[in-house]
Length: 392
Image (cartoon, rainbow, N blue to C red; front, top):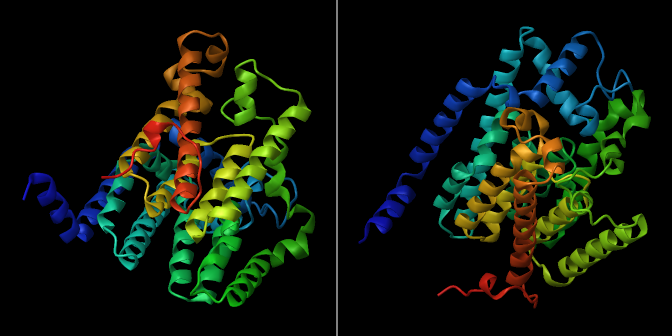
C-alpha cells in the first residue's frame, strides 16, 4: 500500500476527527482576523442596521427607507439580524458572533455533504477539499452565504430521503435569506422519491408565513431585493467586461446576446439535465452569467454543488485560487490595501492585463463546469480537446 492510499484510508477512517480539527482552526482564524478592515465592510453596514433596529427602524417592516444591506436581500436576513440587538453595542462582539454563526453553517454544509456522499456510496472524504478553498474561508469570515447554502443542501438531503415537508420548509428558509435557492424549487421536481405537491405546499406556506409582517406593514417592498438587477454592469460582469475591453456593444445587441445565452442554457438544461443538483446548478450558472456583477462570494454557492456533481476537487481549488487572486481587482476595500485600485485598471499596463486574464479564466471555468454537468447527463457538445480527456 503506497503512502497516498494510506493517507486516504486514514482520512476516511478518521473523517469526523479531521473535520472537527479543521472547524476549530476556522474558529481560531475567526478570532484572529475578524476585525481586519477588508473583512468587515459589509458587516459594518449590517452592524449599522442593527443599531437602527435598536432605535425601532426595521427594514421591510417599520420603514421603507432602507439602509444599504438588508434591502438587497430577502426579508429573513432582517429577521436574522434582530437577535444581534441583544448583544452589547460593540462591533467586535457583533462581528465575532456573526462569524461563529457562519462557522456553524460551515459544519452543517460539511456534515450534509458527508451524508449525501454516503447515500451515493461515494468517498465522503472529498468534503475536506472545501477547507483548501481560500474564497470559502475568506467569505466565511465576512459574508453570510454559508447560511442559505447550508439550508439548501439540508433541504436537498431531506428531499432525497423522501421527506417533502422538511425539504419544503427548509428550502423556503434558504430562499428568504438569498434569492438563488429559488432555482431549486423546479429542480426538486426531478427527485423521484419526493412527493412534489407536498413539498411545494410546505415551501409556499412557509414563505408566506415569513412574509406576513411585510404583507401587512410594507407590501410595496416585497420586490426590493430584485432592485440590483437594474444596476449598472460592473467590470467583472460579462457585459461590464466587454465594456472594459472597449468592446462595448449597443444595448440591443447586448440584450440579444444576453437572452441568447439564457435561452441556450435553458434549452440544454431542460433537454439534457436529469438530476436535481445538475439542473439547479445550471440555473445558478444562468444567474451568474446574466447578472450585473460576478461576485467572488458566489463561489460558496457552487463549490459544494461541484463536489456533488463530481468535478475534480483539484480543478475546483484552481478555480478558487484564481477567484482569490482576482478578489482585490473587484472589491475596492481590498484594492485599497493592495494598490490594485479600479483606476489603475483603466490606465492599462500590467494591472489591466492581469485583471483581463483572471476574469477570462473565471468565466472559462464557469462554462467548463456547466459543460461538465451537461456532458455527464448526455449532451453532445464540442469543447477544446484538453478538456475532454477521458478518465482511465
